[in-house]
Amino acid sequence: MTSLRTTHARRRRRLAVATAAAGLLATLLTAGPAAATPDPGDVPAAPESVSAQTEAEVRAAIRSGEIPGVDQVVHSANITHLANVPHDAFTGINSDLAFQGKYAFSGNYDGFRVFDISNPKAPVTVAQVLCPGAQNDVSVSGDLLFLSTDSSRSDSSCSSTSQPATEKSSWEGMKIFDISDVRNPRYVAAVETACGSHTHTLVPERRNVYVYVSSYAPSAAFPDCQPPHDGISIIKVPRKAPEKAAVVTFPVLFPGEGPDGGGNPGGPTNPGVSKTTGCHDITVLPSKDLAAGACMGDGILMNIEDPENPKVIDRVQDNVNFAFWHSATFNQKANKVVFTDELGGGVGATCNERTGPNRGADGIYDVVGKGDQRKLVFRSYFKIDRHQADTENCVAHNGSLIPVKGRDIMVQAWYQGGLSVWDFTDSAKPREIAYFERGPLTTDKLTTGGSWSAYYYNGHIYSNDERKGFDVLRLDDRRTDAAKRVRMHELNVQTQPDYFDDYDDDYDDDYDDEDDD
Image 1 (tube, rainbow, N blue to C red):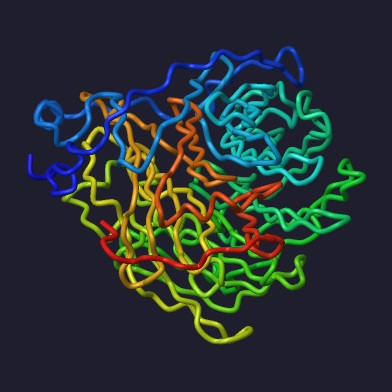
Image 2: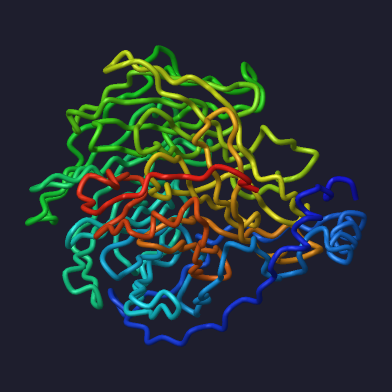
């Protein structure tokens, strides 16, 4: 049982325990073709059974209180669980989140769902769009909503079905909706992109929205998407004529000779490291003309002053502890970047003593220098120390800054590790200050689930749990209370705002740093 025991786990038993809020009933408004139905072709693989010894260890850890019981909700004393909106018959595996005004847009493998969050204690579903296609990561800008499709589909419609990638008619890429009437989203355009759209990032301008499409060559099963695939598709979308959206350029970020291009070669040269065949995710900071890319085997820093021609200004690798560079987050001053390592692809149990504190973790990098001479300098790792069961997928995943002037604090999803609020103001000594999680989904199978995205928006934390639905949390902590006064009209986390640019209020920078625990 030592793999499940930590001091933090024992301390957790003394912290607040809450039960999940009752499901909220909502009226569903379906957009798109009436024939659209949830598509099992994009659902993750079935759970894998574990050994009898592992199952016995998990059950024993639950009985002893070292980990929560199945589906039991536990959290630190400074977190309040306000609401949960469970899955319904039309909702696939939950993925990413975006926000605009009083609405939250929740992507899922069968489309997306729109919540009115004007009352965070009682979110109400105001629209449900069936449009199957993994992962359906979602972003919004003005009257437009963007949806990523990274699975082989029979066509670009919302009635498409999954099919083998070897079919010549296969389609994958970016879908665009008009949300001027948010209760009735209207599908207006589709743009096919090389290797589909695993994730995407918006670079908004007044007349146009640029979309950086991240995708990569996954395996030999995808014959039309093989290395070298060392760039990103950039789509230009006219706001007043989104039907004219089109790929305008495909910048190669890892130029090099040979069949694999110029990215990290991965194993066997670097055992355990993913070969770079594209980017998984890109975060832009438009106010600073910067972007950070998490690109499988590489982390990069880019100048995006010319949005159609991003320029790589630094590149780093970690061939000791990082397996798959997954996502990136700038701090507000743009002098730090947090990169995440999705060890195991998000389906493995890696939050345990066996895996250790530096793998499947965050890597914190300082940004030093000026202009195009800026460099990424490694400072430390951060990983939750709440060990999880071997039936729980757990690894660093999507998170966002919590806007506190003078501090670097973020909330982050860890799949079945729940979510963590942590402070990296001292980039060499990060520390957790709050958490929320559920117990394992099962004790006899390694089952994927948990928080995919956990983001802070206008005073609350919103989490998209793959299987348990949409959660709303309140964080009450003197270290983050000032963030409650910051109000955004729109938030796409991969398009990081300058939280304080237009914020007009007396901001209290005083901070009492004693007794943080």
